[in-house]
Image: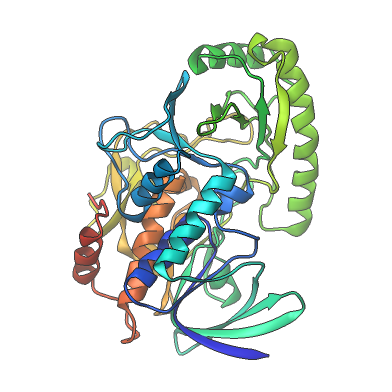
Length: 422
């Protein structure tokens, strides 16, 4: 078994992990980014969902820093578009605030992320699975990795868990939060079609919901049309398959994935039959992996709760912004019993990124500390970029002292990097 040591190790190369690794490397830290799949992008690339909802609310921009830089870089590649209820608004970003919903394509997003990681000096290790984590005296000392029949032990001063499911914390024996199947929302296999005629999403949703109420949609738990145009292409991404189950169990994941792929072809035929806009559409692709909305989070120093979101409890140490709304993607219908349509934003506390019981492990993305029912407020990709950026910056600041930075030091650095905190 070989052995290596870094300043910062980030595990999970979704958009949160990429932002964390870039933040760390740009601060001069020797940074390793580990990913089990073949390329960066996480859910956006490997689960076929290159859609960025939650950059703003139409009024104000909520995410800046490295996340905004990613969108601006995609724009220079002609690879991003802003969308609304009537499909694409524009094929280029404005120079002003980013307040809408934006889409790109999986290949161009992976390409852009790799270029940004390369420029920042991030060392990457794809095709690599983390199989163990060693914690001694409240410090995560090393992790064990597996790739192509070889095992390797890697150490770092600080670690960032952007796996989506708090895998580092789980492997290290730290306390974690795991919601049940109902709380953790539906699971989905996304698919893309071409040959779709122009449609107004609002009107199409009204008809779709009416047909669902009349029990004419083949899967009765789904009652909301979700679809959008991807980047500057004629592809339409559809989010209509759904199933419930345990996203942390291999047998359940396999069962759900198999069933969801069967659903795709049933749904496609149903759309062609019932909607004139889809009569001539053809399948363009199916996501390689099942899409998970919630699985496992760290047990954080500060947990984000539904009660805090409802009351808008003040946050003393914000490192990013999340939505106050929570709920959605229920297993019986889209709106969960606990769904709350609350407008506005709330700060994400620094403590939600800190794993309890260890002094050098942070989380970013949907693995940060939050009640499962509250995850909708912080799981959208722009928010994941922001928390990843914050976690990577905090990890970099902890080197070489081995102590996480004060909020004052972290805040100063994040603001200098154009992050939006309040």
